[in-house]
Length: 235
Image 1 (tube, helix red, strand yellow):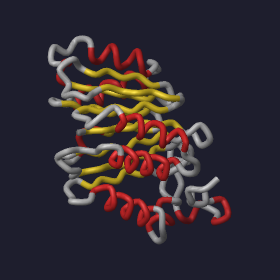
Image 2: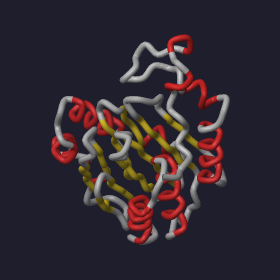
Image 3: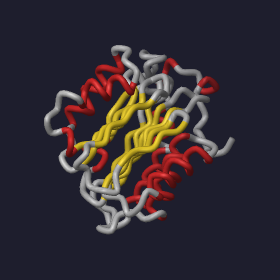
């Protein structure tokens, strides 16, 4: 099973993605993106990292996600074995599931979110991921983690999970990209890694590195009171 979620946080303008699978290196294979291009999740029996990169380039050039997905997937003669989801910088989504994808397979959308999966125990898996995210409150990264946990609890992977990943990008903050590539408990390990990334001293360092909105930011150029506070996961 591979499940991915891409989401747009309307309050902050941040984009986030998360994924989990019973195989290795789900972050490297599936999740890509920047605040300027949006996010992509390319997966399947024979996933195309080329799809993931091309759909980002199209969205960065201004194509809506659904149109970009259609343009990327249509010419590929191997598309029956692949899935692609995309979320553009405005929070619009698009998705494709090839006809030969391992069932249960498909995608579900919601306001500012798209969830894709294949080799699912049941449709309940991606429904749980989407609905848990939409019902959540607080920081984007916390909502994404909760969505993955809900998906695993709703059926997960008969092979067991081996890898999980989280990606959050924003114009006003450093990218957060976390990967657990091979573990007997990847969701727990990802949650531990996220907690460390949101704590000092690492978090303090990320608050003084350049961002799209402040490309010259450096420690001696930032007033302490101007630094963003860490998101705590509560409203």
